[in-house]
Image (cartoon, rainbow, N blue to C red; front, side, top):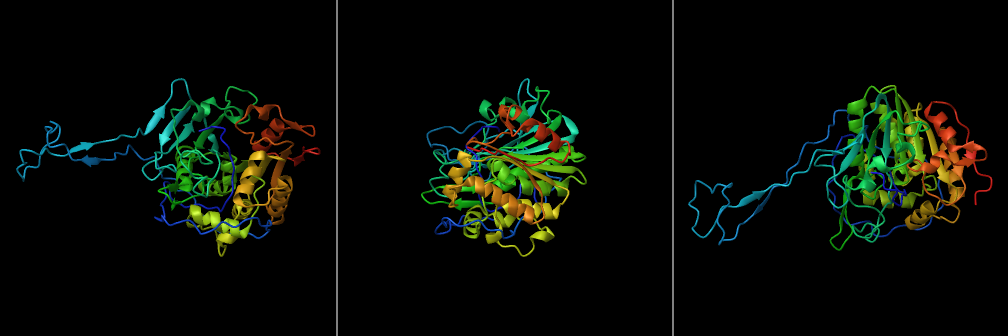
Length: 432
């Protein structure tokens, strides 16, 4: 799950209420043209989806039968009976059935992590099976983690072979196993403030910042399953099923995963009763809310079909629904949520994806500050830690244990945050 892939986030947002939710069935062509640069807006958003069900359990093994006519010169396999109502011609054999089995659970020797198949409705961009990760520890304290790894909204960027994201999940790839990651996933480090927490991790393989619910035709035979919301919401439902009595819940994400973390924080607030909810968004603070871009990318991904039916979302439009609004709407819906973000002031990955999406990325440090100001002007507090430089992400990296900005260590700041303490904003003075 934790490949430190190129992460990034941009787009329209949303969610739907079912664990393994539904696709709108659309395979329509993408909107004609993407808007280009536009100035950030302070407008409030509109759209989101019902909280995840707490009853969804991972689907059991799914068999995909395929029927193949056997050659006329080959005898029928002994395991398949010919139809009894019709005499089989002497030159034809009965059809055979081939069954492909997808393992429901994959365990690993000497590892606390288990990979669980999401079920038949959970698929990656290329249609391959989706798995999420579970690590059981203290059942009263839970981390729901959203993996990052790019975003796509054109035929080129969504390509399965050379696009801007990974279109599949392979639990058997050591690079994708969270046991091999650092940072908050290093449970042997006594300094890790989350080492005793149970974890549920949602891998990322759909190019839609965990907010999609649409299969889109990008032309040339490229049909992309933007199924991110269905996949991640299924993983969240598993977290609720296993750890529904938790009193402390941290919803965290890096890059593309952090782009949607605030909205999943709102869903977690609905699902976990009166639990304390903390959202940590790692490396997506530079993406502003621009109406034309919001609606264009949201249309490709189908985000408006999965917007929670919170009263605060009533009347909002796709044009109003940008990434800053995820914080605003979730915060207004569930005021007990504590929000925080981490960014490097000149994050080169955010700069790349912001430009690719059509935002003005000439000064992303200023976009970060403006987005935070707009969120807080709407009445939602967002604690922030802004480090210098061009790096991207910190939570799955060991540099979280050594980074210090203006005399404040990131580790101390994060430890106080998850402990429920108030933390001050930390911002680099010389951010170059």
